[in-house]
Length: 134
Image 1 (cartoon, rainbow, N blue to C red):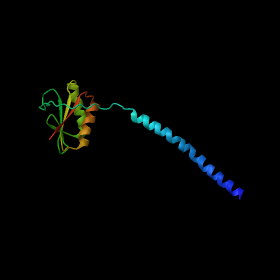
Image 2: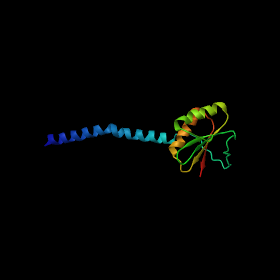
Image 3: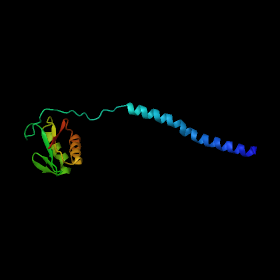
């Protein structure tokens, strides 16, 4: 009978020794989570302006309009989504100090607006504004 109780005790000890590394890892993970949650990485700065923005062509800005159908218009001409970056790059090369204004319809696709934002960012435009048109 003592031999059986020794075997049971050995099994319990073996199970505990198998779990102990996992249990030791839990506090380390909690500390890492707490430290990473406190660190704030700066991202895109968004500032809301209450001043009206002039959207007439020729006002010293690159105007990109995204309508509700997902069409992209630059200077009044419909531009293919793949050609948006090249068109923005050409306009930015001519007038490097001009900002880019994206006028997006409220019902336009977010993916199209993000694609235009990416194209403008890759083109090197320094100042990008988004206007929500209704």
